[in-house]
Length: 515
Image 1 (cartoon, one colour):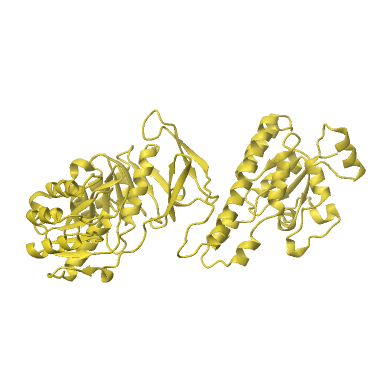
Image 2 (cartoon, rainbow, N blue to C red):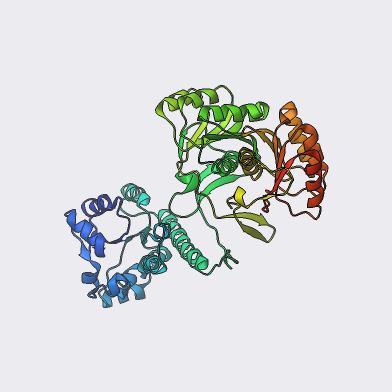
């Protein structure tokens, strides 16, 4: 008797080629449901519909198709147990040797804007996961395939093993099936969890995270730390959906820095902008009339630190910008696109990693940090700062141009490790004090870096001033305006000092610590 294969797929990529090889090369009989059977028939291949094989029609609008003893008996029977074999014969059930199933596109559905709960519910597959789990459980006697990219490996295994896939291969396929159904169930559970969240309680009571390894990395932060890169969800998104245009393989530290760069550059959409990062902190950032000018100003802000840095651009790379970037050693560049002429210029630096990420804005909704015995989850700091909501607390009020500069400084400070002080002029950073244990120390570092250029500059602080000492230090360096979140019991002391020294000060009412 010919071997029997059950094919029931939502994603029909590679289906016909697989079916043709099964029939013409290996002599399989095929049974299929719904649209899969139709596609195979239209390709001129013999196939039996599941409803004809079971003698029971599809019902409930297709919700029940493969949930039948003739299907699951053929999958779960143990061929080495006489009682199982006898029961198959008694009920005229053929053993199934291959199950090929992929699931309704639940994740793709919920990724669509304005999808309703009933629409999402209808994309929860029932028969598919049941088939996969049953087949994976009985891998000792059959093979299960859950992704089109497995078809070629399966056919090669069949050819190399005389038509009988080895146990190790079947077990590997079973593991992949269990991973697949596990991820599918987690996606559903997560979606339903978020249906119960509220504006005041935006995080679910149960939180799960899972991913598939897409790349083993050379090492982590240090050579003695193994590391790997994982993709969340079944649909490539974020960096896993980006394009690596050229360069050496990405490292763990590269990816961490690139994500920090993405978060900074997505703050700026209206005008060409560039940011240069080192160890997740910006050493230079600028907005200008052209991308090339923005990059050159960002690089010049701290050219020493920029050596070996990460560059993020909010416009496609053009030839002028590419030429400027090849004049120094950089680790990575990320941009939403790259013009052909620019690509040819960058190729002269073969080891330079160039990534194209068309969607720089979309990122995770939460951040996760592991701690002993558990993990912490918080929503991302992606609140939009609106100067119209800021408090103008000093006697001297800012002009519209000053407010625009303060907003630029404030957006950069949001992405600098606390304690953070950022000094800017002409929408370019001229001094950055990052990760200091006290705010006065951060201010001194930023102002010392700015030097004489601090005169007429603008200062942003990611947290409030507990004393007026930082305000006085800023005034002595020539700073003309300060933006800070406020919230200190001594806010008035800082305001009084600003009034005394003729500074503008605005209070945002929103803190941006970054630990």
